Amino acid sequence: MRLRRPFAATSTLGLLAHNAFETRAGVGLVFEPQLGRRGSRAFWAALIPLGMLAAARGGRWAERISAFNAGIGVAGVAVHFKAWPWSLHGGVPMLDEAEGLREDQLPAYNAVLWAWGIASALSLLRETRPGSRGFAVAGLLNFPILLASADHHFRWAREQAKRDPERWSAALLEE
Image (cartoon, rainbow, N blue to C red; front, side, top):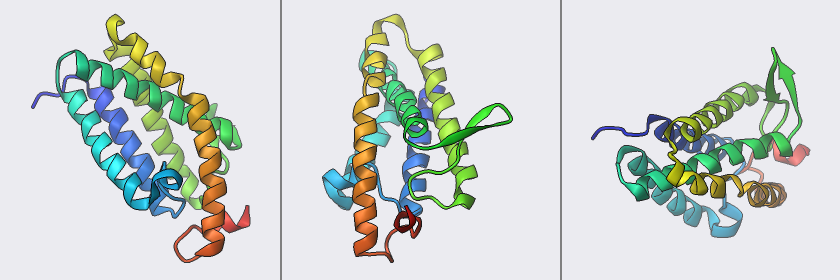
């Protein structure tokens, strides 16, 4: 199958890497407080392949899904830099702490965020045609919803870490 929107595909893979990184680090999965672990895994197990399929296919629906996903990707990365302290490193913003991650995890996590954000921005700029720009804007406008969701997620994750510290990042207990 020919990949019609490579930046959209890379954006979707960035989302997958982000979710996998956070889950593996013991800070939970996006939407886990609302859907539970199984529900959030099922949600992402459906959405990520849909994003890849949309990036690979032609047609209006696929282009609109890719545009929305790219907007969400830019908003999702921006949420991290709004919610957590960061500083410039060689002129590039990098998170100094985030989401209950250990200091040694932050360089890789910053790389994941930057790859996801750049791919999403390039998808918006290079692969979103005028007829789909409204879907991109709709994705971008999710910033305040994603920010509120992240805030809720980490309050919830800290509570979970207190109840079951073996399953969660120890860094959640330090904050």
